[in-house]
Amino acid sequence: MIAWIGIGANLGDARANVLDAVARLRRLPGTRLLGASSLYRTAPIDSAGPDYVNAVAAVDTTLDAHALLRALLDIELAHGRERPYRNAPRTLDLDLLLYGDQVIADAPALLVPHPRMHERAFVLAPLAEVAPELRIPGRGTVASLLPGVADQSIERLS
Image 1 (cartoon, rainbow, N blue to C red):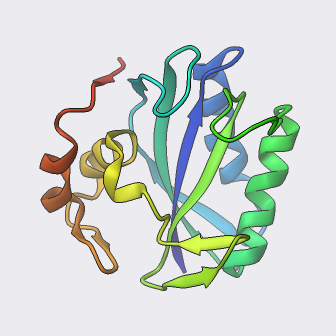
Image 2 (image 1 turned 120 degrees about the horizontal axis):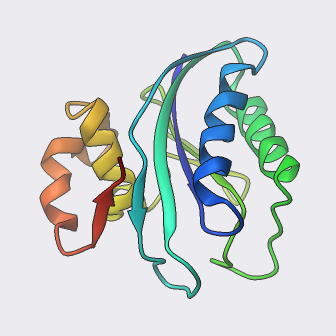
Image 3 (image 1 turned 45 degrees about the vertical axis):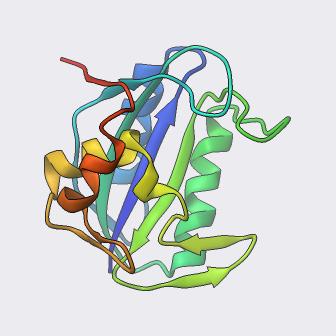
């Protein structure tokens, strides 16, 4: 199954945390990293704190969606992720954006496609870099959704 993962951090060495997350995805059992986007800088949305460093990655995995989510949460915990309140700054945030073309509504544990991914430049811009024709179930292609977030500031990092 091809899954897409959103990666973000804005505490500590955010760039290093995002790159380490990609490296850890590469080592997940039953999972092969297919690729990752460039890194992007974005301002926090609905919160305060330093700017985020974001990316997306694609994996081919034999893990079911819930097992993959547990593995992502373990990677977050290895980076000291805490959840003191909604949208709190974070050392690492990993979101299961897409799991094939499946729609999974197991709230609050797992919602796929990620419910706000089509509204976020920090997801759509990295996805557009690596998979512009990727289809988000019920929403359309990444390329068709990107103009809808053009007002959100995002900078590709070198």
